[in-house]
Length: 81
Picture 1 (cartoon, rainbow, N blue to C red):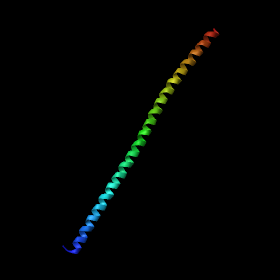
Picture 2 (picture 1 turned 180 degrees about the vertical axis):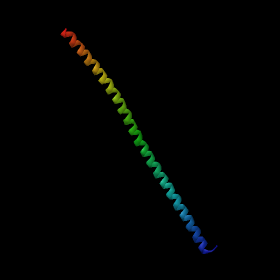
Picture 3 (picture 1 turned 45 degrees about the horizontal axis):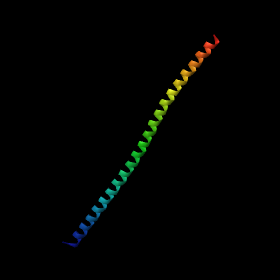
Picture 4 (picture 1 turned 60 degrees about the horizontal axis):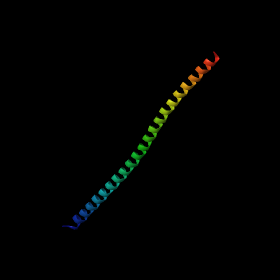
């Protein structure tokens, strides 16, 4: 085999190894970033769920307050008569 063919094969092997290594590193970094993004999305979703539950509780408390105020109004009316 001629010297230029050997040099070309070595260059080919080096290029292939470098490309493969770059692809693997890039894939790992992409996977890591996706995992971090998924964690952030899960935290956000938990926050949204908690906010929804708090809003429901707030609505229930507001309704109870309206009922209590109505009862007080009825009692005040009954006392006036």
